[in-house]
Amino acid sequence: MKFELFNSDGTSSGEKAIDNFPTFDGDKGVDALRQSIIAVHANKRQGNASTKLRSEVAGSGKKLYRQKGLGVGRAGDKKAIQRRGGGVIFGPRPRSYNQKLNKKIKRLALGRALFEQAESSSICLISDWTIEKPKTHLFNSLLKKITPNSKKILVVADTFSNDVSLAARNLSFARISTSDNLAAIDIVQADKIIFSESGLDSLISKYNKEKVA
Image 1 (cartoon, rainbow, N blue to C red):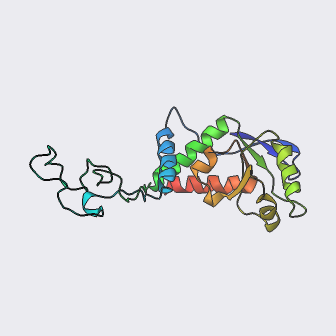
Image 2 (image 1 turned 45 degrees about the vertical axis):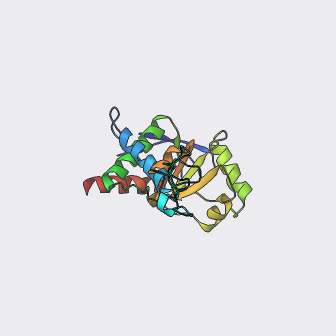
Image 3 (image 1 turned 90 degrees about the vertical axis):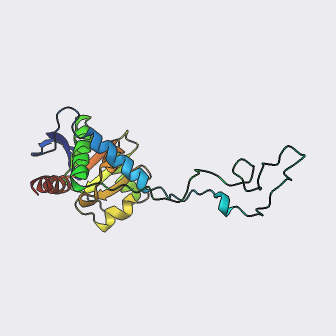
């Protein structure tokens, strides 16, 4: 698969073909990608919603009304579930929403995410991430040269220099990630993904290595 390549100063340098880039037929991997994204959101849930059972509501267990004469003799105590302020039956209780995914599902989701972004021309390459000084405006200018209209940019490399890390941290529309920490949801959420050549090579190498394993 071919991707547009840029020099480290943001100027175009033609195209570069990447061997062994993930490819899929039909809908293979779509369900794994969906499952992976759901798991990420589920794992962020605190799971601390709680209601009180009848036995946990404060108050007396005394019968509210006498049995005879008032027509409400079977109302029970004030902690009954049908009364306002009483216990809640089948309400939410603290629980864990965590979902575990095996390595094959994670790998399949990552490959599918890469494939879909590549198909929509949302991936490009840069020879290397370098800037003269750790200044935000320099890094911003570089991104605007490569992709002027993107609102969510994902910058990926195998490693980042301290200058690049400092320059990128104040840009709300861009985030950086190393190739070994890249997840499927990071890829899906980006409008444009800019890989360094070494970063994409590292990611593809790891992806194919996991397939052999």
